Amino acid sequence: MTRATVREREAYAKLADAHRPKRPILRNMASAFVIGGAICAVGQLILDRLVMMKVPFTQALAMTSTAMVIAGAFLTGIGIYDKIGNIAGMGAALPITGFANSMVSPAVEFKREGFILGVSARMFQIAGPVIVYGSVVAVIVSILRVYVFK
Image (cartoon, rainbow, N blue to C red; front, side):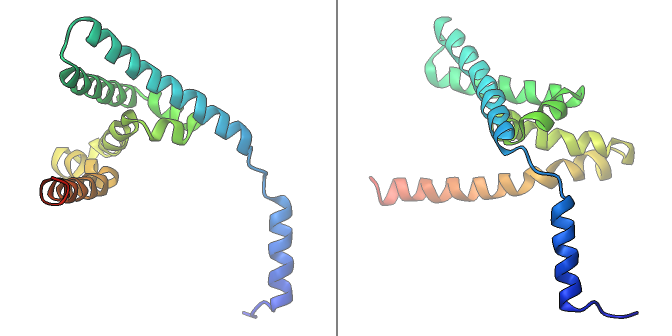
């Protein structure tokens, strides 16, 4: 086996770059903005409806978050949210429904391996770090709020 010279590697990299498909950045940004905005608008509609029904605001916030997580998990379970995510990218991953998707997708994918080693173990594969670091930051912010910013 011969080693490629620097010149050959540079020529190959140039050739590969010439054949690499161009990413439609503007289209991706627009679809992320529109679909992410639509997801957030649905959440706002739910919140507004709950407030109109005289639900206390803090309770309405919790109910809205719960409804959006359930909707994201349900749509992932029936295979629709992954299609939305393919089109919207971060527009679908960033809202709270994306968190539900990151929990349910591995669970659905590994359900054939059983409940313990498949669903339960794989469910936190992607969302686990988010939960851990979110909890750590919440504790730090709470300590700062209590002891520093009285």
